[in-house]
Image (cartoon, rainbow, N blue to C red; front, side, top):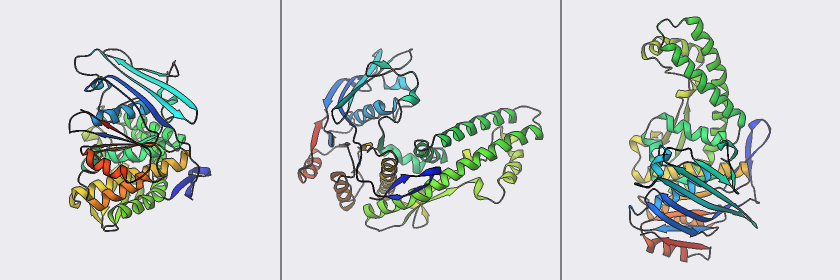
Length: 378
């Protein structure tokens, strides 16, 4: 698989990397997390499969792994939603291993109190000091919202990947969000002047141009990797593409902002700018959302996340943990076979797979001598 290496000035070029750091989750202990009162396991550094009927909690275990890496749930909107119904608190404890080094992490939350995060017994005060230590990529049925929902999730996908590679990009993103917030507050006042709006527009244009340049550069390098993976999974049946739509693609973004003022004042918020950019998903030139089958949409999203894995690996030199939640549903046999072949290769480090069919997982894993553990969830 083609990877990318970061050079000066945020320039990314194709590069083949042969040596990677592999950090993996060796132990997990769950207390009062979602539907689990208690659950614990020792994991394989390579492939771990969770099998069981729908609704038994396979996805919740994957979410616990995600939580230990990002200090939050991939699925729940608020932390308190992760506490088991009727219980006063939740706790997740894990051990991350690398060669002969083991690092313990503990995360706990009590209703009505602040979340506690500890690493090797020491409290983490700023989450930014922790996030990024244990990179992870998740492929889940909930990812279909990237296709089905509005542009905010697609921007979040781009921004989430780029922010891990460029601190200056994250700064520009946060600064732009603050400017938009202040401009929106001004738009709600009865006597917002053109002079005041000019000041905010100038800042939005300056910061927005930086955001646009970074997103554009990222997609120029990311898209070919994504297209190659999609073609491999689908057998080259369709041409997948990503198109970036932005106010800064126009000849005069400034005029776009000015012309939107009447509408902005009427609605009370900024209707155009980098915060409204979108990423268009297409197959054969047609929108995936409207014309793609369920299998095509799932293949599209899987390729998108595997390309994210490749991109992150190339920049960090560390293979992220990969979570494949219900990955085989709605894929035909040839596409399932390709993904299984990929999982068995040296491309990935630690992998977690959830599936409802133990027989399918057993058949697939027994076809290779690769290290594997299966956990039956009841």
